[in-house]
Image (cartoon, rainbow, N blue to C red):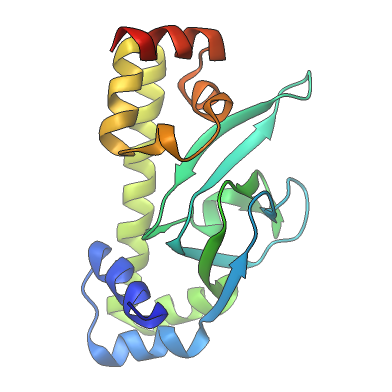
Length: 191
């Protein structure tokens, strides 16, 4: 499948755009391939892009006071990384975003995307749908971390991200679930 077709599929999974609105977005897109382990965004550094993951896996994370990664979110193939407006402040990133596999991306300048949202109702509806989805995901994760035992958190992860355990380091999964890698190993053996 061509990169443009993958991008259209991602966009239309949130909100269907007319060919005219889709073309406006595609005119601003740049396609890039990033190696595994690269940072797309770094805490406190300037970042002005919106990211569409065509293929691959990324994670957003912060560092604990002890310098350990704390995984906040995973972003799989055919998804959108958290919108610029909620992962940055004053143009600087509030999180780190790292590729966990080689990744093919479509990127759009965040300011130009905002301008499109103002001028085009369909693109505004798409942007709002992405924001709503991000909020729902964050609230569900927060509730799960606060109220579910590790076994259920792992079950939810598997439902949301099928096969992820075979694709990325288990330390990232344990961090996302709020458990140790030893606890994750034990839970995996039980299920």
